[in-house]
Amino acid sequence: MIGDISVTEKSFGPKTLMKNIKFSLDAKEKVGVVGRNGVGKSTLFAILAGTDTDFTGNIVYKRGLTVVATAQEHHDVGAEQTVLQYILAGLPEYPELSHIIETYPVTMGDDMDKIAEYTDALGRFDDKGFYQIESDIERELDTFQLPDVAHRPFSTLSGGQKRLIEVVKIMHSQADLALIDEPTNHMDYVAKNQFIEWMKQAPEAMLVITHDRDVLKYVDRIVELKDGGSQAFKGNYDAYLKQNAHSTGTQMNEFELIEKRIVNLKQKVIEYQRFKEKARNPQTIQKFKRLEEDSRKELSQLQAKEKPTFWIDKDSVENLNYKVAGQYQKFKAKNIRMDIKSDESRSKHVLVSAKKVSLGYDSPLFENVNIDLREGEALELRGRNGAGKTTMIKALLGNDEVTIYEGEVELDRHMRVGQYEQEVSKGYFKLTLKEAIERVYLDRNLSISETKIRQLMSDYLFNEGDGMTPVERLSGGQKARLQVIQMLANEPQLLILDEPTNHLDLPSIEELETALEKYAGAILYVSHDAYFRNAIGGDVVNIS
Image 1 (tube, helix red, strand yellow):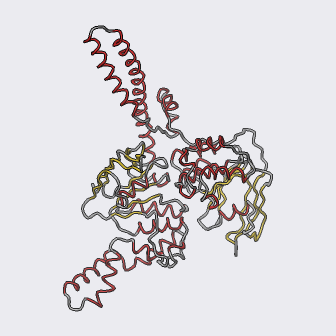
Image 2 (cartoon, one colour; image 1 turned 90 degrees about the vertical axis):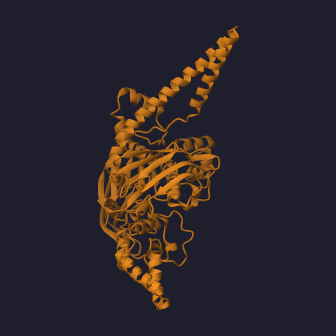
Image 3 (cartoon, helix red, strand yellow; image 1 turned 90 degrees about the horizontal axis):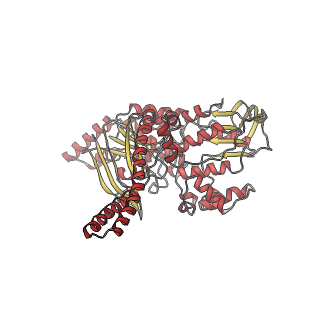
């Protein structure tokens, strides 16, 4: 064992976020960390990395353990610090060893202690592979399609690029424990496969926050944060689903017994109160008074217990027995509720067409691409990041910045289009969530009321406090749910989805897939999530 984690309480003001997180870590073990949006996964990582010390509990690591973590904020990065300098500065031992090797030849003179320290540093620098580290990093950046960023200022990178840089830094850290937050967001399928292969073979232990099922397929254990606590599941994602279905069934039985006991105790309190009032013997009065007080105390304790969060994946639900299936329908956790219109009578009207298309900006990104998408069909645009998938979508939507060098691009201008983009438009950032939802509808000349806004917030798991929060301060998962609201506002006949699963949690991803499977319109999508692609299906157009 290399680590023992115990967080007995973590609060933000009056709100308790965690109250009973307990699990251990073994050497070389790969652990996936999952949980609904907002349960505190990133907060837990900050605690484990030592950047958040405002909690009750103990984080005990094996003596001498080296821990590295992907950074969430980059406020302390100098304006001129290059990407390569940033990565090297974050590698354990590299700054210290590099400093000794660069400065001691000038300053050590005949000082035998410094000479010995310098000699040791040279050996350690070689053992760590630091002499060729810069070329190794540049090669890794090239794999992640960041070939020209090594000597650019880190501050000039986009949020998605910075996330990839964090992953590259972790991959070259040679630490004992790596804490990695959502590593595959913004990765294409080639880069993601490269990351997964590294993860499988790397000697370090890892805790990986992710809802990417392609990654969870290769972990040794999954730790789920739920209801303030944690539960560990041995094995990968498929094993987790089976164990979760079984444990959730047990938890529902326990909760149902508690509910029945509460009903029984309420009746007992009334009965003991009546018996006490009717009794004339002082001893009998005291007896029923004591029974009433004991029942009230137990009742209070049981009523104080919060209802657990129950979620079982849809495939496992189909295999539940009649009793457990009934319990699940009664107790299951609230999930996002997507109002997608379905219609079994599907026409074969062509909605999107592209014939031998070549397009780009200053020069063509690709050529000879053909698309024929009809109502009721799905089509995937597949290709590496930068190949032109998003540019193709922009061309279909009539963006004037895109130049069509050859061929024709047509989209039925009379149909309603709903688009899910990778990032929320910056035009919404300063608005509160409520104002943003209102703006979404008004920008489309659609009617919207306070009641409708409240209903949408409820359907997409937002509370009243979220409604007053500026969009720029929402979590990635919350922004993703706002994107879905925006996409479906005008009851679209064509959905255009660009990496829709990036920030959604597992139940929300499943809800999205289920809704899209029933959708009668057309779907044009980009996704590097193999599970999502298998669920939606459709033809594939390769763009390269």
